[in-house]
Each structure stands twice: as structure tokens, then as C-alpha cells.
Image (cartoon, rainbow, N blue to C red):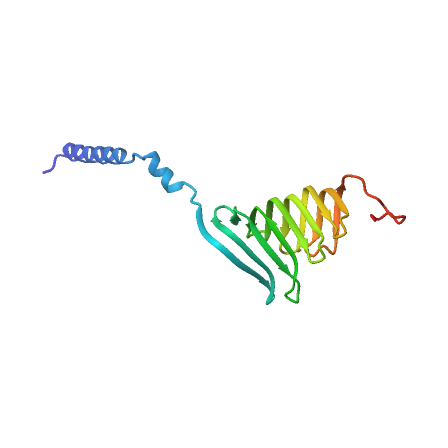
Length: 191
């Protein structure tokens, strides 16, 4: 016959030892936890880039750059840290505008490109837009900035402004806060 007290003592001892085993094995190393939970940023690198953008089967732009990074983080973006050049084409695949800058960053989810450091955009007529900081919206085909910008026509008329918005071909240019002295015609428009 089994003694009920020894049976209870056996289960109590077994439960106590099992509990101690689980408590002892639940130690977590901070470095292991950090390695398992830290954000991972994936970065691809490419050299001597030549990329083409087309929409609806038509060539819209050609980009060249010596270095490109494609970064998959919270926001996926493509970065051009060592200059970039872009030729923009009209519907007949003729270059209508070209752009040069020292830095560019394309945000894929927004379809927008941030340009900075010596940004220069020139159309086929010779009109030029210069700014230290400019955005290009791929969907609306607009250049814009809230920073200082300077728009020069081919006949050397200069229109400085703090903030500007221009279509990709410069068929429409809107000055947000013109600066400097402008000569106006009788109808109120710049000469």
C-alpha cells in the first residue's frame, strides 16, 4: 500500500524542481533580444546608373548618375548622393527639359524626388530655374520649392522668388513671394 503523504511529497518535490528549472531557464540576454527586434535597413548599391522612365508606353525621362543607393526602410527610397542628370521628354520623345544637381532622393511611395545642392533645370528655349532645394512631382510633372529660387529667361530677365512652382517644360511658372525689383508693363505683368 502507498503512503498518501509520501505520494503528495513526491508531487510537491517534482513540481518545485520543475518550477525551478523553468525559472532558471527564462534568462534573456539583452543583446539577443536587441538582435531579434532591431529594425533592419536593406541597402543596395549600384554604380554608373542609366535609368529610363516611361508612362503609358512613352519615354518620359532618362536619368544618369555615378552612384545610387536603394534603401528599404520604413519608407523605401532611392538616393543619388554624388550628382545626377535627368533629361525630360515630351510626348514625341524629344528632350524638353534637363536637370542637374549634386544630390537627389526619390521617394517611391510618393512618386516625388527631392533635389538639393546646386539644382539647375533648363528647358529647350534656354529658360533656367536655379535653386538650392527643389522638389519634382512625377504625377503632376511640377517643380516646386518654398526656398529661394531664381528663374531666368533666355533673354536674361531674372525673376528671384522665395517659393516657386513650375511645370516641367516651364510653360507655366508661378512665383509665390517675388523678391527684388521687377519692372511691370501697364497690364501689371513683368516685362
